[in-house]
Length: 241
Image (cartoon, rainbow, N blue to C red):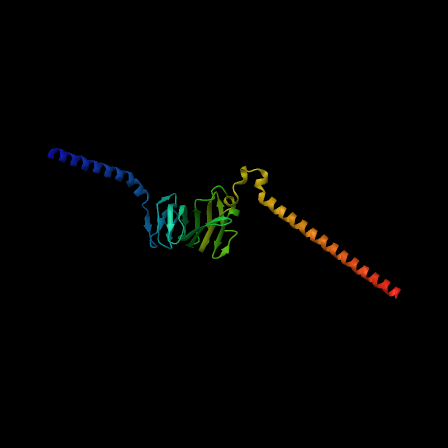
C-alpha cells in the first residue's frame, strides 16, 4: 500500500515538473521579446564612418538598436515624456546630434514631429518610418530655431536630409492622406468631395446674398412707392382745401 502511495506521489511530482517546464518554455520567448534596453543621457551612439554621434536629451529605452551603413536603426524607441517611435533611422555626418522628443498628434490632419539639437555644420539623414510613399515637400516641414525653412533640407520617399544647420531642429510629417483617405481609387466625385462641397457652399452663399439683395431692393422700391403715394395724397388734400 505504501509503495502505491509513493509511486503516486512521484507521478504527481513529475507531472507538476512537466507542466512547469512547459509553461516556462512557452512564456520565455515572450519575456525575451518584451525586454527593452534602457539608456540615459550620457550614452552615445557613435557613427565612426561619418564622424558623427547620437545621444538623447532624456532617459529612455528601445527594443533594438543596430548600426548599419552609417545609420543607427532603432525599433520601439521610447523617450521619457514622449510617445513611442516604432522605427527610427538616423545618420549624423560631421555633427553631434541630441534627440529631444517625438510627438504624434491626431486632429484634423495627423502629424508626427521629431525634435533634436545639433552641433557641427554637417548633415543629418532621418527616416521616422512614415510617409515613405510621398516624396513631396508639401507633406513635410523643417523648423530651425523657431523658423520654418524653405531650403537646406530635402525629402525623398520618407527620408529627410538636413544640411548645414545647427541649433534646435524639428522635422514634421503631415499625413494629409490619412485625414482625407487615399483618393486614388475613389470615384471622381469622392476624390474631389472637398472642392465640390466648398463650391456648393460658395454657390449657396451667392444665392442667399442675391436673394437678400433683391428683397432689399423690393423693400426700398415699396418704401418709395408708399412715400410717393403719401405725397400725392397730401397734395390732393391741399388742393381740395
